[in-house]
Length: 109
Image 1 (cartoon, helix red, strand yellow):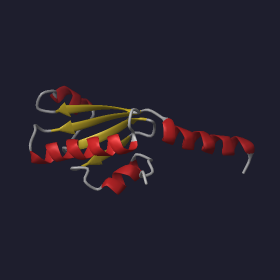
Image 2: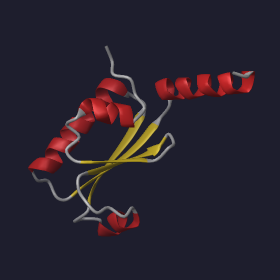
Image 3: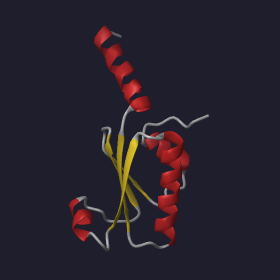
Image 4: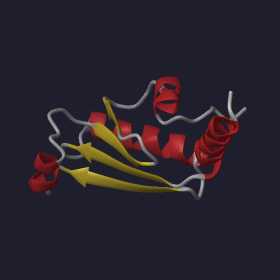
């Protein structure tokens, strides 16, 4: 592998370990599933991204324009805006391992 490719991979790994995450969680009211998704996501963030994330919880009943702009068709939906690539997750976010993989995070030991 040539030197620029190695540097690019090293930078990507460093970003994953130190980068800032911008997350938006879209929910439909504060029902049981929404509350579970919020709780699960907060736990994931505090355990793996402490001090390196912004989380915005958006109730589509209160802000339907935001949901329409993001083309939200199911809730809860989590959108990872930063770092790229953009990713979407649907459900109560209880499958921690799958969420961590999707966020490009390694679980804390």
